[in-house]
Length: 545
Image (cartoon, rainbow, N blue to C red; front, top):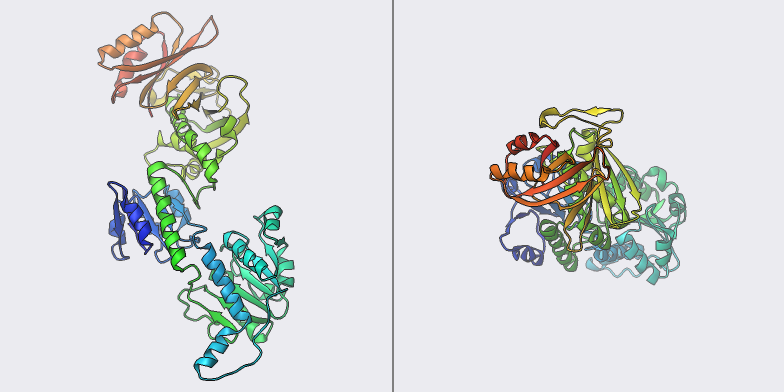
């Protein structure tokens, strides 16, 4: 594995990566980054390196980008997702540091500390009124995530009333923090202090503007240690100059470093150079956290804090992880064994697999389906986008199994609705009607106690087989001697059978059987011709899992 560390992270994080046997850890500069990315598996950045679409195009083997920090504004998420590159951030690593800096800014602002420090440095003893208390005042938090929650805890210690606007936080979670969730209009109208702790999205960009400032009470003070783009700097400067806003404390700016920011230098404005999360403790934690996440993903496929995949808790991921290989292999099986190019994929979940992580299992199924027919790299990150671009529809449902294994996954490759038949195409399979195949090709499987994925049913016919290696899928009329003829044909070709799983339909008249025959080594598709020549064989396909 080759991991590029493009921006400085803690030595502990670098050391953790270097401890992986056979790994090549390259700490590089901006000038050498492009050349090093040509064969890189992972990239670690902070905020300085811009991970653009062009940069990603120079890294054909890249699997993951780790951001040592919360925001990913410097990473082109759409381009990364299209290329199947997982993007992970490290939320929580600097939460306490940012929250403490937020409160430091708030207290320095309300007590006018920079003014008195400058006076003392100039040799003056200006003992005058020094602001106000925060006790009993109302603090409005726009965003109640990790950092906002830490700020709320500190505000409670200062005996402040805390309001919060966050459409993604439950009332119960807010109550645990002694915070009142309110509409944004109420927060703006009632807050003595407003602190920003939200991401930059179209709905929040420039949210502190002339229109919203007019809704705030006169004398409000604003603190921003989140993202500079949340504030219209010209509108805030005008409000401070007019006296409607009593002051502002800012650690972030729309342009960094700021060149023409109208807020810098204004009376009652405190500025710091984006250092809220730059404590020694925070940087140590962020560097270690991003290194652990990259290591665990590359080694074990464990996904933590992904920003271009739906989030799973550690417990959810632990439960769903054994089924990921099952999902991908079932998808690959049905894609290769179907006698047509599927237009729809139906997924049925039963038991534990229906309870957690179905979005991840869906992506794994699609990755298996698409990798069987496409040359481009498809994984759980970009599989939904690739499927959508090709018009592949996904249908999902949950069900309760009444017998047998309780936790199962069923995947069906289906034709477009309205099709009444499928052709053999270039595969050489004998034509079969959709009715005979029940409208497509279906496989159902589970995960055994040892973690191995197994198929339990093919086309509604029970059989059990391993889902790995090179497999022959055979369908035949249920007549005596077929197994012997298959074995004889393969023997003449020098192909050794590893396992032979057979299942039969229950019908007596016109009964048929299906087989999954695992063979040793790599074999050519040419071995199918002698098998198709056996009179009872109605279908023969080669599947590689």
